[in-house]
Amino acid sequence: MNFFISDALAQGGQAQAGGGMEFLIMIVVFFVIMYFMIIRPQTKRAKEHRQMVETLSKGDEVITGGGIIGRITEVGESFVKVEVADGVVFNVQKQSIMTVMPKGTMKDL
Image (tube, rainbow, N blue to C red; front, side):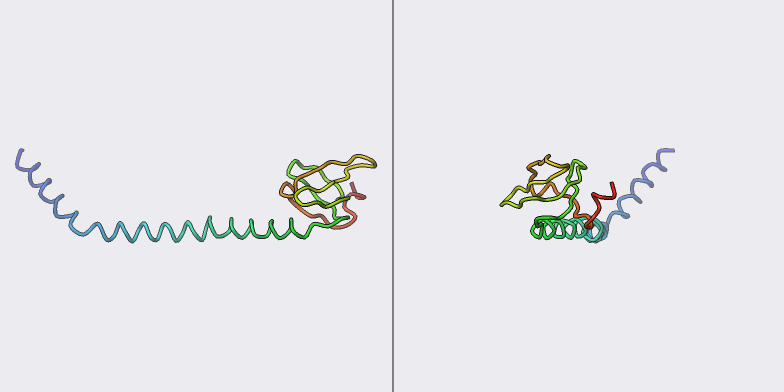
């Protein structure tokens, strides 16, 4: 019975001879998949959001990160004033604006 164990261990040593290159290729393929599935789309979304924030102007109807919908009344360096109802104005950071809505959206609500 002891001779079966020694044969199994001897065969296991031969199987590991060329595994290093395969492992390296697998790591590279994994990184390429991660790049195209996660990193690239995330940077594209961040770029689109940055462009949207730069083009904010007075009169745009927006939705903030907190879900508040309103109309921009004033645009500053890093803050905008958003009117959510008659006479109710919030100061909001530009980066917290999630979406610019089509004109007239607030009237439909």
